Length: 258
Image (tube, rainbow, N blue to C red; front, side, top):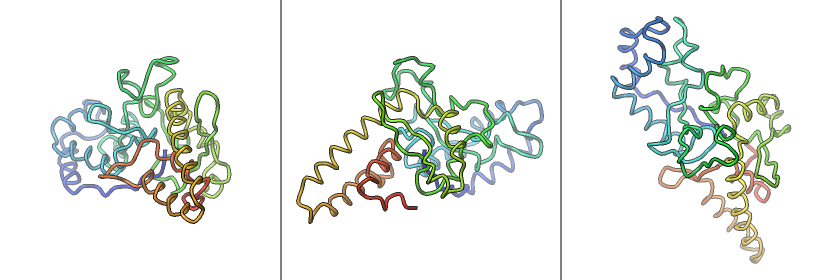
């Protein structure tokens, strides 16, 4: 998970929301918040515009695990669950409460997941978070610093994320909150750890190939490699952005100075 820039609320959304809330006030009992959300997605064309806005803002990656999103494996994630909506705080129809996330292994036939070691062990992201109140438990990706607050922990069974104590101190974020985030979102589940490790190994091979070249061209080629790995292409980032960033930072520490 890396920092997301908060997108500007679409004007059409603001106008449509005002009319919708008059007909469907928050926390009215009936309809329930799930029913209000269903009504919004069914009745308001702006709901699909929100999907497109978030997809573009996140460069095509899940806000949490950083796998590529597709039309069949994405959903608007309410950072604070809809169920916590009150008459004075609407978390359901609230653009600032939205991120776009994968379905967290709910789609068991996705090429990103398998049943090894078990379906339950690999549930992640919003599907894992479920109805948990994230406040004080999960870092909001819109409030993260521009540099990683995790570091890699390479083990035989994959690449795991652990809190980076120094980066956490710099950001004013408790390492315990970062650890809690990883846990509540399932970001160290076996499938993600294994796939991050594959990305790391392939990128290390690319870095080693550059470092085997004459020293006078290494910096230029490392810069080109970093651009290929970390900059959007056709509006999309490559999967596991944070893993790629941490891997390259060993030879290009300026990438994570923030």
